[in-house]
Image (cartoon, rainbow over the protein chains, first blue to last red):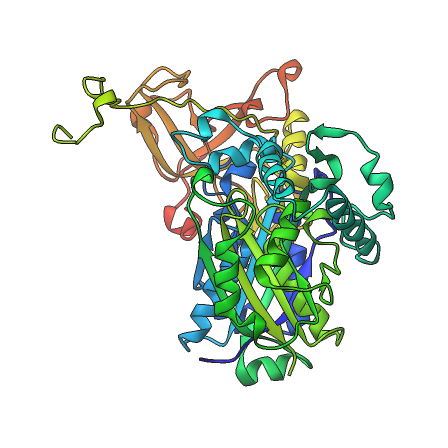
Length: 351
Length: 173
């Protein structure tokens, strides 16, 4: 295996709706900042991979248009995943493992504002039995939250703790959308939007983009004073049928965590892609992360959730924190599909 | 399918052979800064492109970025309403929402001073006389009908100038 590291990360200042810029205009400054952060131009990038979905913008092949943001001339080696950008990073990591290129650019973007994202995401459900019912994302998360509460392992107050901590931590993240100091008790006093869901159980609807540069071995050391090395990365998927799995745990996260080597040394902090409060608790349990591990110091997806980029942002945030010397071993996680269907786990370390 | 083993309760039940699950989603389109300037220009009878600061090419409609260099195209260029046909096709097939009597000509028009052709209709000339290199001009709707849409230009028509040598447009088709 080649040593591969995340050496640069950039993201937009996330917003409820970025209406003055189209996807290219939103993405281009972020791609530029990530390349500048690594000190490379496109001439040194051997592979480019992006993550996005046409369903958010309502335009077929919208990702082809956003390639304008990287200047694909002379022709570049390029790929796209109709998934969160974390999976684009995985593809780029595989490309670097093949040894043909040393530097890759990964980017992801999502504008949820053009449509109704809670309805748009129903289109990823099984097309025969679930999608025709149009169950919105909050209703589905309500089923998962209810199931978790009924196990007795988690109380409503634990969910409020997750929301309060995420919003408070986001106060020190200039890119976050929802950053405020609320006490868990004040949150619990708020009315349900659909029992057992409070508004604070849900992520803010967000427009945004992110870009990451990864590099192999000595090239990473040349370009970064402190690369964040990918020591393990793995992703696993479960059934699309929500009735066919236990929604109160995440078998795919547990397996991906084992394969990525989460437990082989202590973890300083974790960036978990949990758009709903209950999902953070499920992920912590599935990854075996104890109370001593700082969770989502960036505020996580509850503070900013640009769909298709929020997972890549977890990897980028974790890497940037390691590069800044604010930790040496981190777990970064990304999820895709309904109710934690597919999960990617990445272990990042400093030198 | 006929030898599928069914439980007794389902024996004799008619098989489902297909399901229809209609889906409809509404979106509001965000044209962005560059395209907004182009669209609002059309409502003022202006055609606005943008120039790449790196390679100097002028794009119309502008999308805010040079697809070759990957840099923002911020310099605005107001373009003449004349251009040259680089390629065209004669539409002989009718389709839903067409709104045109067939046959008609759909062409790529390279506006003067620009580097990428714009797709539009060519009218006021028999379709079998349209050719690559033909000089054309925009025909606008009446002033009170101008809107932020490419439909503010009804079509292009020959402007009577001599043809442009097609070889001078290589790379712009």
